[in-house]
Length: 374
Image 1 (tube, rainbow, N blue to C red):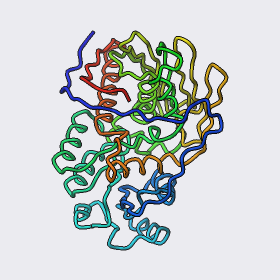
Image 2 (image 1 turned 90 degrees about the vertical axis):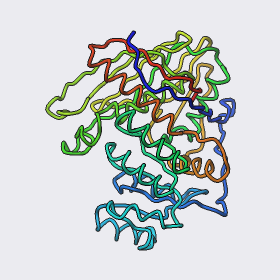
Image 3 (image 1 turned 60 degrees about the vertical axis):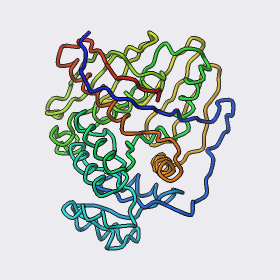
C-alpha cells in the first residue's frame, strides 16, 4: 500500500456521551442562559448563516450574535435591523482586521467558501479572537496546518463546524460504540448526499472556491460518520468517482464512493453525491446493529437498534448546541468536541480519497499518527 507522508500530529478527541437507548422518551437537558454570553461574529452571510446560524444564536445559552462581516452593504442594513446589531460591530472584508479592537466579539465564525477559510481563520486568530471554521476546515492539509499554527501562536481556541458532535442521536451512537453495547464493530456504512439542481454558477461547483465537489461538502459527513460509527480512524482507503451529469458538474466531483479499512479488521463504505438524495448511517456489531436515518440533516434525526429500541430525543437546533459547546469549552474548560486536529485528519482522508481516484482506485495507506477516538 502506498503511504501518505504527512507531518505526524497528536490529538485527543473526547467522546460525546448521549442519553441511553433504554430511555425511549429521553429529552436533552435544558440549560438556562448563563450570566456571561460570548459574542460571536458571523463572517459571510449566505444561506447557512441566514437560516441556520443566526436563528440558532437566538436560542443559545452561552453565546450570542454580536457582529457580522459581509461584502454586501444591503445585508448590513437588513441584519442590523433584524438582530439589533450596532454599527460598530458590522465589518466588511477589507476592514475585518480592526475587529481586534472590539471587546463585544469573542468568537469569529468563518462561513465563507472553502478556499477563503484559511485566510479569514488566520486573520481572526491574529486579531485575538477564538475561531469556528465551517467544514471542511480548508482545501488542503497544508492550509489546516496554517490555521492551527496561527491559533496556537495567538493563544486562541479553534473548532470546526461539526454540528453533529453536539446532537443527541450522534452522541448516543458514539456511546454505544464506546461501551461496546453490541460488541465489536465489524461493518459501517455512511451515506450523505443530495441532488443539486440549482444555479450552475454557484460557488460549490467552482473548484477554485470549493476545492472539490460532493466529497468536500457532504462527503465530510460520510467520513465523520464512518469514524464515530466505528470508534476508529481508518488505516487505508480506496475510492471511485462517477459522473452522470458532466455538463452540470464540469469542474467538481458529482458522486464518490470509498472503502475504509479499520485497525480491528472492520470495513466501511462511504457514499457521497450532489446527484442523489441519501441520508443514512449503519453500524453493524458482533451482536447487533444501530441505524440512524436520517443521520446528517438539520434534524430531527431518527434512529433504531437491532433489539427493537427506537431512539428518541427532543430536538434542538444542532448549530446552537454546537456553538454553546464551543463557548463552554472556552469559558469552562469542557472538552473541545470538534478541535482543529479533527478537521485536519478529515482533510488527510479527503486527499487520500482523491489520490486513490487519480490512481485508478488504488488502496492508499493512511498514517494518521497517534490519534484518539472521535
